[in-house]
View 1 (cartoon, rainbow, N blue to C red):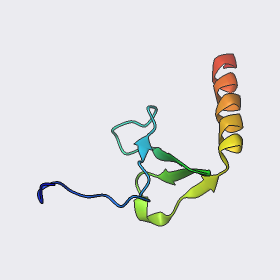
View 2: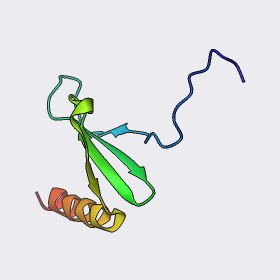
View 3: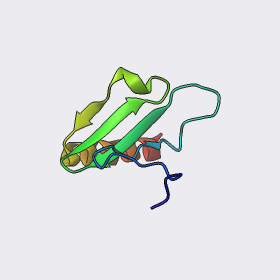
Length: 72
């Protein structure tokens, strides 16, 4: 292993920014799926904490949000 490669902690989640987040610094969220929980945080305040949801609850929320977006 090269000492120049950054190492990440094995329990550090991989955060993904919403595709609806703009580059203007507006309303931005990041999501990280992990074993047993889906975490959501404000991308502008990454140290401010995150909400954690059971995967089934997150899936239900995303499904309802997608339905609402189609009907608008």
